[in-house]
Image 1 (spheres, rainbow, N blue to C red):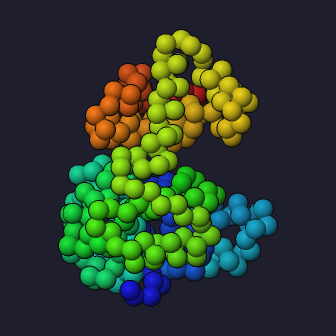
Image 2: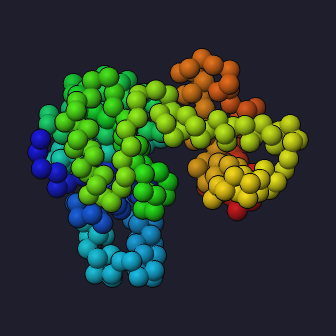
Length: 283
């Protein structure tokens, strides 16, 4: 295994810029890649704001903030990743798009580079099979918001080697994260448990069992959850919730994972939660 000094992150959305930030804060040089310069500019601004909050809290110095920002380069071409030592994919939750990307990355980076996916539900075995290095492909599922959440779910595909998992564990430690291993089943651990709960909360809204505020209050005050499931769904993005429920439903073929019709309607209407200003709540 090569010594990892430079990390590539593909996808400059909320998860991608958070992943880029934590690697940069931990001292890695980062190349953040997306298809459009405006997306990359917004990502750099988001990272700067996030680091600024740590400075205000006194948990990060201004010098360290500037150093972290200085370690992040951006690019619109995957070719810029040819000299990276580790790559994390954080694009949209679409199996075909991810497979295409992994095939491209496989042809660009050197054979000893590990390719990780931040997928929250898609088969790592499937992604690995789109490359010539299935033993060096794994899932590295960060939690949102990445700079604050300590958990990383590590998923081993059918061919993922023990040494690849060891490298991922070591990287998580260097990021100050706690790694938990999961098998390659739809939704892994986190979303196999979380998303059906969110889906059931949406059914409760649709069937008139309770209003969103009532359902979330029950889960916060009665179950000691820090955030209600509907507020959390808005935070995650209802389109993402629907995509994961579809993966669970198709992967297991079990009706208990059927996405709620109200969830489908809200996504079709473009009411995706915080990112669009309207979901179960208005923002």
